[in-house]
Every structure is written in structure tokens, then in C-alpha cells.
Length: 277
Image (cartoon, rainbow, N blue to C red):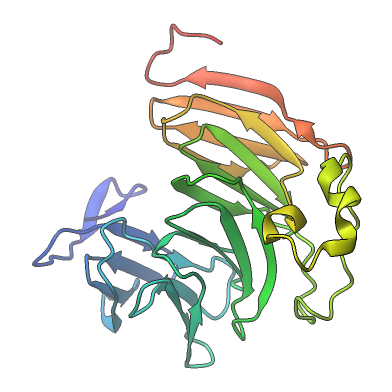
């Protein structure tokens, strides 16, 4: 159902033979995600302009660019671990083999230039160029498996926020130069307080597992394990908004230089207004 809140009435309706898993909106498009298909409609006349077949997609994974101009759409590809990128302006389709395991979550930057992906293992998050599929950066959430619930780019594309079933929200620094690949970009400066093992064993870096050479999060905020939280960046500088499926709302600020535990600025529970934190 398409509801016009100015007119306080329903102005359109679309029907499907199977369950709708997700809906994405832009000013000019409505995208409807089913288990195996994605339908793209023109908003003005609800005319179907494109349909895409995907691998089974029970989570309704789909992301669309929000900046005015040509539409970029990201969805699961035709095989495990693959994402499909539709560039509607250039009439081009790009397939990226992002992970060996199934895709669990992804996010698209507002301008449609960067994609962040996570697999069902949930240990690594990869950042790709949406234009040519180049791997630009890889960051590590942790060493053990986790279910990634949400990924979000900051509007200036300097930061990436991640939430998982481990109950910790991580903020990573993006060192992405869109003109360069992962091999010829300048190496990022070492993070403050690197684990001692990194420095003492750096001379055999090539022999060690990638784990010891990983990029870890700059800032963290610890919540309840097992509860689903979604993350986004706030309008204030260096702030993260966290929404819990239990009705909780947190506004936190992170220190972009020193990192560490984020500072809680606001906290409410919209389902239990009497509860304060």
C-alpha cells in the first residue's frame, strides 16, 4: 500500500503472489523484494520498469542509492556470496564475488559509490567500489562468528558502523580513495594501542594468519547480547544512532582520534516510556 500522508489516503496498491520481504523507496522508484525476485517500479505511475531474479532472499536484502540522479541498486546475486549491482543510469550490471559464505548483510553509500558486505560468518566486513567491483578495504569485527544485523556508511563516507548479535556496535575508519585499489593505496597508519603481537611479530607478517594484520574498529558501544540493533549515523558530528527491536533508542558520540568506548548522549525506550537508563 502506498500512503500519501499529506492527503491522508492510500494512493496506490501493488499485489504479489508471494510474501513481500522488504520495500525500498526513492523519490522516483519503489523497489519490492520477494523471496526470489525484486521488482522495480516507477513511483509516478507504478509502472514496472525492471525485475531481477536472486538467490533465496528471506531477509529481503536490498539497498538503493538516495542521492538525486541515476539509481544504483544492490541485491544478492545468482550464487552464494555474490552481490549484484545495477547501475540504471549507465544501464550496466556488475557482479561482485564478495564472500565464500552466504551474504548476511550489506549497505550502500548514499551516492551509490561504495558497498559494504558481510557474510554469515560475520568476522570480516569488506568495502567494494560499486562502479568496478574493486575490493578497497577489509575490516575485522571480531574473531568468532556473529550474525551481522546492520551496516551503515556515514554521509561523508569516512566511517562505517556495524551491529551484530554480540551486542557491540563498532565504528570503523574508512581509508578509501575511490581512485585507487587496495594494493596501490598508501597503507593506513597503525591504530593507537595495536595488539603487542602485531609489532613483535611483524617481521614474519607474511607467514601469520591474516587475523594479526587486521584493521579493527576505532570505537565501540556495548549493549545487550542477542538483541537485534540497527545502526545509523546521526546529524551531529561523530554520532551514531542505535535502535533496538525492544524499542530502545541510543544516541552515542565517538572520538574520531582516540576512539575507544563511545559516550552515551541520549537513551530512551519508546515501547516502555517509564523505563529510563
